[in-house]
Image (tube, rainbow, N blue to C red; front, side, top):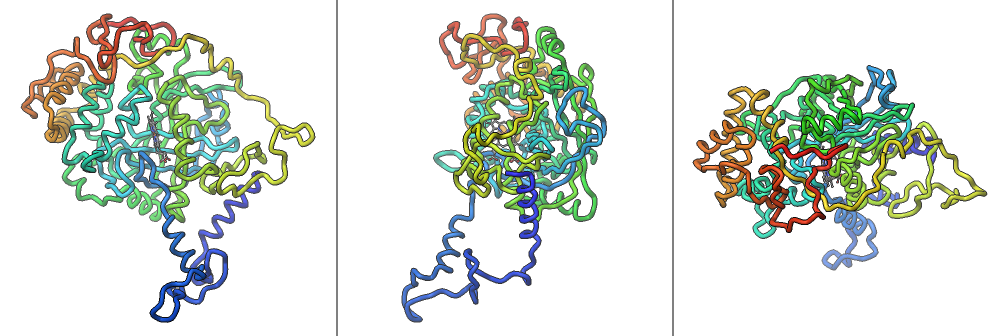
Length: 556
Ligand code: HEM
């Protein structure tokens, strides 16, 4: 594939998308003209249809296959195209070409809700996906973030379970609106979700459309500079429009169910192009080890945040959306993001949830839109060099790299670029014993949600949160779930727990000490960890939560 091939592909895509109906002759899919689209061939005016009628069979069989599977999560989305500009040089930290001051590149953003189906409302109380495909000269870099800086979980195997609690009941096919039992059942056994849950039921739980929300990568990345030095980083993308949320859930019910796409394209069409500023928080390896051992902040745990006062934001550049899609299916439904679509200079950290995502996204794309999904015009890289490899064939191999050898040949040599990143240095030393990892809930996990409740929220926000949450909990059938959940919120704040007790009329657990959680080990009672789900206490299980450097003692 040459870079020209993909430029030609882009041009061809645009030429097709820009055609107007008066310039087009109606044909079957093989290009043969057909005089009228509604006609069908039959044996006489009252007889059955004829198999020879390719036009009708072509029409019906294509229609029968119009759908690709919707995304298993983040199915409802909105998107637009725009540009990146690096306004503040960042090349001392990261050698990726887009972080050099003045560098511009085209990009596409897809915004989404998480749990709902592709026809669901944009005004759900749900995190929002915020994924950006940067088409850099060295390949596509996908920033796949959410509008919340933290997430519900930190153990990768929990993701399908948690998502299933958001989906329809396997027997009744009912969604969660009438019965939130599954949702709170999961949460009350996985207390590391407390921060994300408080965030979700607070004012930022229902953003207004897309233009007024921030995005956070959530996971820690490693950024490497040209000298091979690396740091841990958290990337933030903040709205230049400011924040706007739907704080009245009743009003949100009546807002356009397609508010994300409607508000976004109307703004761009008016020339009111939204923009965001990307910044980074940085920690050296030593700082990260200190953050873990002295403050209980684990950079490999995306339920933790890095306080801004200790790790200030450094501005990098600006993202502007200025072009609406010509065709939604081709440019938004078929776009395929992955946290593993990285470019030289940007490396994953050891965060186990990020590590599992590196696998999961390309895997689901191959299923959803096919093995050659990277060849679709919206996904095709726009590299500064002709690109090639030894991948061949498969369904819809639009480009198949001609007659070039399909193995590493000495007679037909391919070019290589020297490695820019010393992977051995960046990936450190991983040789170790295998452990069966599951995280342990510990007192430090409640520090950040406590700060959110006590310091970030004002009194009105707290009242709204308790109202939103208690209303949501009212459909839960098993009250022991709410007792446990309020016990979890008591570890965050006695104030929050007692307000919820008043609003729900249910007395929560007084302490988490000694509680057996189904989803995680319980370290709230000090060194005597209660294993998850009554697992036998064996050395096979690690109770250290996998922070960088030395294990953090349990400060109960
Ligand atoms: C183990 C954890 C996770 C797994 C296995 C997972 C898996 C997936 C899958 C399978 C999709 C559908 C992709 C597609 O069909 O195109 C998806 C979409 C998405 N995920 Fe995750 N996810 C995880 C956690 C997260 C986290 C922590 C974030 C944010 C920090 C996130 C952000 C997104 C976004 C923004 C999309 C939508 C991308 C788009 O617009 O096409 N996910 N995820």
